[in-house]
Image (cartoon, rainbow, N blue to C red; front, side, top):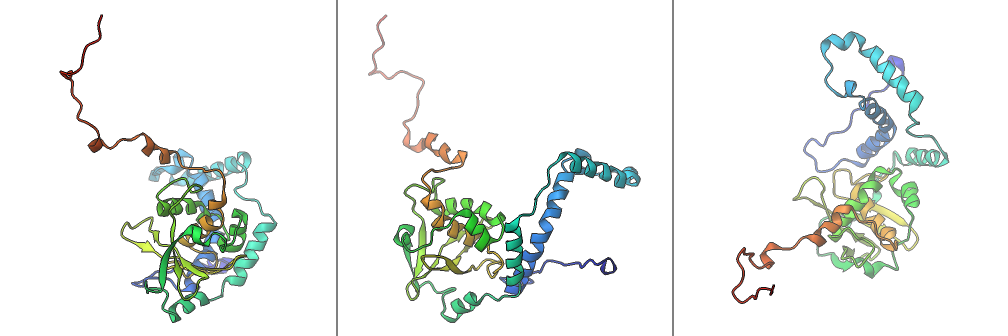
Length: 281
């Protein structure tokens, strides 16, 4: 592989640790940014049923020819997955710049015992910092924080879980914790999407104009090339979504309005109550 100018890179493993180092998670994010388009192309190829299913051994001699035909059809009739633009170049340059940077904010939190101690935080509602947290557009979040759209696409589901509603533009009970010693630092308890018993605590430092630093206690929380979905969800809701005037709830979010609690309903009976009078003919 190396003779062809290719370098094989494997993802890091935790090996009993709770979290990847900043170097490991930065490298993983860096490689993923390059690799995702390959996965997207593979997904297009597997949309052809013949290649999506198990291929018998008898067809292996013709497999390369079959794949070539499929790829030719895709190239001829499907649009490009992604076309480069000026924003992509800017994001790539920023990722290269951040690749070797350490997460100094994590060291700050460790030094001040803010990563685990609950006594240093007090619960507030998001309205309490509505004039202090910066207002950002989704494009600004992508360009300056996530450096991609994947985490942003997951932000809504985490925010809805935290607020227990799909209407995030109304009166929302979105609880955050504010640091008593450093008021410009907050953390947002966030339920894990994969483990029901796990809860993460993304921590964010901010000014009225911008997001300065972030860290999370999830496995990828040390990243400085972008950030994890838990951090993005908090930033997205506090800086963007709560300022929107029109809600966009998921369809399932309205189903609860049509459901009645059976325990609160009177027992139904097929017989007519003796006190009822029949209509006259």
